[in-house]
Image 1 (cartoon, chains in turn red, purple):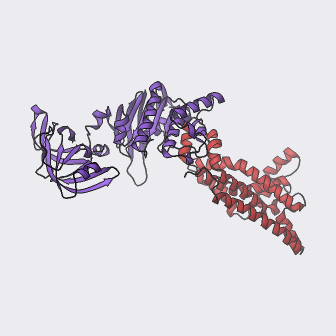
Image 2 (tube, each protein chain N blue to C red):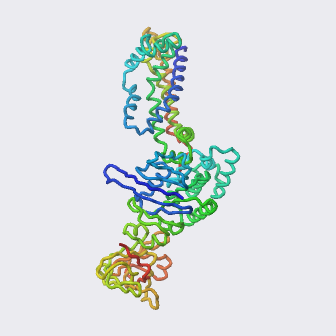
Image 3 (spheres, chains in turn red, yellow):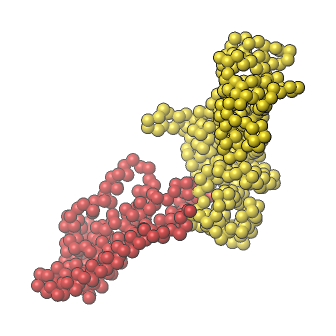
Length: 222
Length: 363
């Protein structure tokens, strides 16, 4: 159960961080007219196609005592980043990035441009327009982004193994735990954890689809 | 007073480049920007509002420069204090009517905000809907709320992009009256875009007509629209009958000339224009300006009576469109009552009566 709690904590942290940094990135990607935008779009989508081991490998190198990030972290906190919970959060944020950013981009782009023009003409700057118009009208996208990044982090394995290793209570998440149980032929225990993960994932995805299917936007024009 | 010189080229793939090049003046009161769709009307409004950047030009309102690339001035839309009501209205769907109306009033104390919103909603007679969202109210009410939302900010200029499209005539007139009443006190310049001839008649103090990105004419509605200079404009202005004709002879003393319509034997009298006998001209006549009779009319002041036969009758709403063959085909508007009383049917012989001054010459 310790592993499950750790996984939940990790997923929660990652989802929160991803919402915070995903929104400005998604805003920029949705509204920028810069011609080189596709480059950033590709970078954002990279974790979708890369094997987790590749991502995990580079994250590990960067976090190691000789990596730039690792040195910085040691200077700041006195200990390294690899094989810690913070390191795990950082790597997971990278890994789940597209799962947060892409639904946000889609929902931002779905907001009628005329509404943004109307807001500007009424004297609102971009920040006010974002908070009062874009964000409320993109709520289903925000929920989707939060839930998907939570669920995706909950289910990750490769990156966690590369960056976090397998330290009970620190970096041993549910998926690692299940792997451990299988390795030691404890099928009953593995099955129990696997079922819990299955149930949670199903519940979480149901939320996403319900939000997007049902008229969660009660203000939809008749 | 707004003065705007705007030059903007628009390229879209697969179409030839469109060049907007206009210079307009909008004094206080309602000025209509009139022209067919695609003439560049909305682009002009977007440039004035600051939503689109002109390639070149200068936009000045009441001495404040809003756009002048030479002086590196381009005030952003949110700082221009210009109200703009879009054709699509663009009410915020997740906010109530009241919240929509107070959106532009951000820096005011809560109490004053409330008062101003209440007052403007009353002016446009939608105070009862203040807790409703745009999806829950009718089209006309939405249009009123969009107007209220724009005007509550006390703008120095109002841009209206066909804000009353799709409303029936009574509702339109009522909203226009409210708008006029509001502006009687403020006297700000209002630039009103439309392609509807009726709205020009109902609203306009001044009209600027636009064709293919250029200003064709500017002046009072009577001057500008009753003498359509161009064929496109004539069609846009609602002249259903546009006929080719040849000039027969000029009668300068009477201020008229006789012309022959198309290849038909029909001869009619029209106002004197710059033409010589034999030259080819076009005449525009509104379908509503033609009288229709089932017996040969006598004792009329109108000079042109043409004999013909009804080809077809088509009723749309309360308007019947009759196509009448007099050698050339005329389109005539009559009422359903007239069709009943005169027992009009396709094939029946009729006489058309055209006043000389209902026949407009088109270059």
